[in-house]
Amino acid sequence: MSQSALSRRGFTLVELLVVIAIIGALIALLLPAVQQAREAARRMSCTNQLRQIGLAMHNYHDTYGKLPPRNGGTQANSYRLSGWVGLLPFIEQPALYEQIASGNGTHASFGPRPWDNFAPFRTQIAMLLCPSEPADPIDSDNIGSSNYCFSIGDCSRYTDSEVESRGIFSRYHYCGFNRITDGLSNTVMMGEKALGTPGLRRIIGGIAVTGTPWTGDQDDINPGVCMALRGVSGEYQSGTTMLDRNGRRWVDGTVNFQGFSTILPPNAPSCSRSGSDWKESIISASSHHPGGVNTLMADGSVTFIQETIDTGDLSSVAPQQGGSSPYGVWGALGSKSGGEVTGL
Image (cartoon, rainbow, N blue to C red; front, side, top):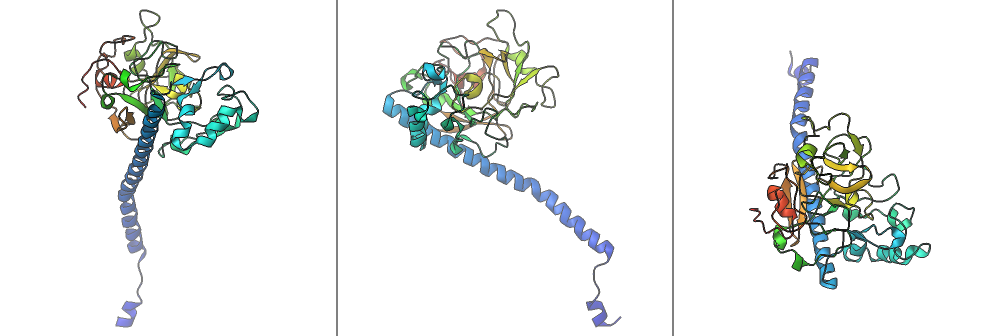
């Protein structure tokens, strides 16, 4: 065969298939690395947003000498406005704050109930969404959402009542830094919650469960029973009732919307007495980051809490006020005045 004939010879079918197979194998090897790099970038962005929120919290405290309550407001809005409303001027949303404070010309001061059709409530604030969140942030009531929620600490009793929580944020209670006697660097202020999605039955997604997590006294929730609702594959046991409120309605400070507890580890189930009664409940932190959640400490630093964090004795009920947490390191990080040594 002449040299010119050899130079014109192309790939055979077998050679072409081999090349395609090699390219496919390389793509399969590189794709997970690309996905991991993208998630690392999203997680870094999420961390930076939490740091900005921490700065806003400290600026609010410098201005008023205290932190906002988890929820408050007026009778017109059922006293359910979340702490985000007061923080709006400190997260570069002063115009939105003025619209809510004025009633936007159509409602009473600070607007109607958080689930009513009110234009400022429909605003989705970009800073409140983690880039790893895949769900639509606008809920069925046409209200914006938030992946960053307020810590109530290691409480399971009176979690949505006027009783002050063991964590930093409570209903109607303003907490100053002087109340955080465990130290600002040892106390969780904010954490992540993946947005609840109707029909999603996996733990990642922040869906809550109602069922029978109650033993003994009617006010005592058993965290171990709640934890056991998770199946081995990450799905909830069949027969449970699924709710989809976690992280929804950034303007609504009710604990199932904008609160979380430090009892069960990140991405564990959440349990309540019923779908409409959250006065005794466990609301777990959750995220779409592999292995855990970002948390904002009271000193403004951000710490990644893994799903394997020590949670101590999950058969115990935390004391309402004072005393150390029975829920290990995670519970100790949530209590603001428990006197524990966290070890982090």
